[in-house]
Length: 400
Image (cartoon, rainbow, N blue to C red; front, side, top):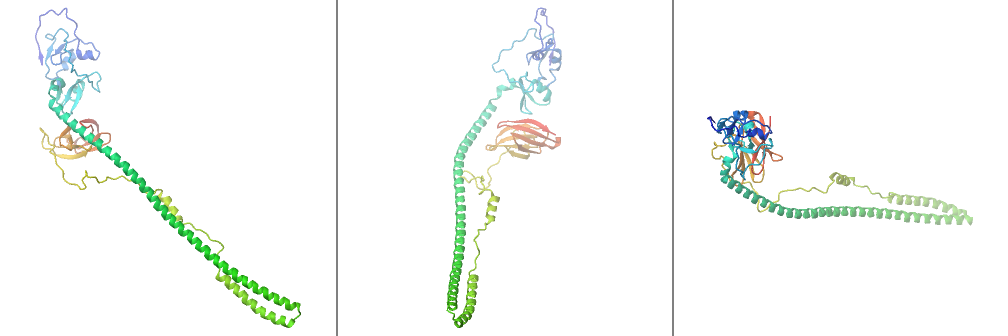
């Protein structure tokens, strides 16, 4: 509000006063008024617009006639906010938006959070003991959980090393079993080749014996005929020739039978079973290595009811959960369309970790990569992207 009045002191020797916000932007604009809450001199334009934004709507404004005519020296506060806005590098983060749960500068508060409930950080920072205690408790619980995860990871590392050794042993054992089976198949094939060779050699030996005996018989008959011919015993020669003729026929038949009964191929040949090689080439690997969740004493083997939580928090209407996503081993987010919120819940304790209020009721929420959530908002025909950490939820971009 503005307070008007008159002053009577002589201001002719007073220093030139400039608008503090404009001076921060490198501009020199003469002071036209003063804000007691901000303890800043304001130019005519800044003075005119200072009471419009919600964060400074109720500030006490002094016009040019009653404003301090000396530069105001503010006591240096060791707790002065020095963090600057990521969007406006020269502006400090002075305000907290309760609607979006985000810290913003004066420009952001004016341009992007006109309808939001804003808190001036120096006014509310003194009453954060309960929040600090709650956050400290959450952080201690997180430390315990992740230290437990470290121990589990160490135990799992030892277990996986043991599993690796067992897998290598099983692979080698399987290879030995295959080798043993192949050795057996090889032994059978060699024995078959030896049997065929022995049989063939016996048949050929029979042919040798029979044919050798026939040859000797023919030679003896030939000698008899030659002797009778040399002695000119023609009568006996004639009779012997007749006898030898029928005998030769018998010998020839005997030889033919011996050859026929002992017939064998000229050679022994190995015909490969290419199906085996084809199967090995097709298989490419001895097997597969897979991962699975081993049964351990600290894990339930059957699904069973554990517990339930009421996620309707103070000052809220009765919640209606329309979607849920598990984002870590101990954290989950739920979409509440009745309160138009996305809530991060500690799955172990049921405590609220963080909450953001949407512009319209959500329909569902899913987890994406890189610590992102996608929230569908059907009334606005869009998807609201939300970033999350282990303590907070923050708005990200929207996808129409």
